[in-house]
Picture 1 (cartoon, rainbow, N blue to C red):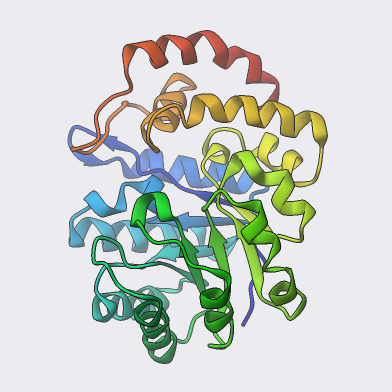
Picture 2: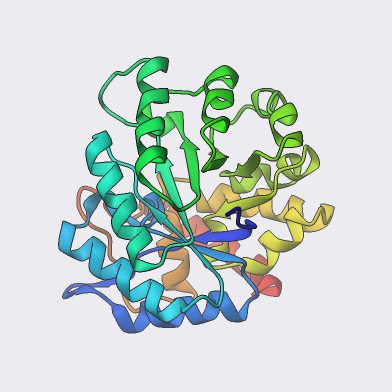
Length: 286
């Protein structure tokens, strides 16, 4: 079954020195729902999911799905290097109540176009929930071309793709697929309006962790909000995600501690000072 996307927040994982801060996580979920967000992505890259233990990851997923309780739709990041592990993750997330599964292209291993297609074919064959493919070459080293994506669109329950490849031309080439019901989802806050203009059905956002209102306005083609969002993105992505967004959320009082899992480290002094200086400009969007 196809699910609407709209604005979906790629939720951060709040920590204290004692581990995952579930009280704060509960508050973040309630803030997102109260802000009118359409969906929440659990265990995306913004959640530092690759750095969680197996036990932490599934406890986090169970907790979030329970708190969300179908009030908005839930996407669970399930992709791994291994096809068999990805299938297991997808089946477990579906059993826990995930509405949609986000499956990134396998990273580190250097596969081929045929390998990518076979990977998604196996995942689709063994999983019942809708699957959203995820193309993010800056993290995986592999950029899916239009022909590959067209092959995935024929798999049935691969209902769309989250694109984070920075190429509007390549995304425009997907318009014929979208006309046949395949969903394009923006994975880059700074390109929210261009994606919306070519028919993207939604945005999976990092910025909306702190500022859901500006993201919703920008994707709805509010030019002023979009300009301000692009300026805000210079702060949110000044260093690798989620280093800056977690500092911004800490500054805004949304996180009890500014804590990242190694090998991620705290934001540099230069960018910290710049965020401290610039952040008040966006108070009107809180």
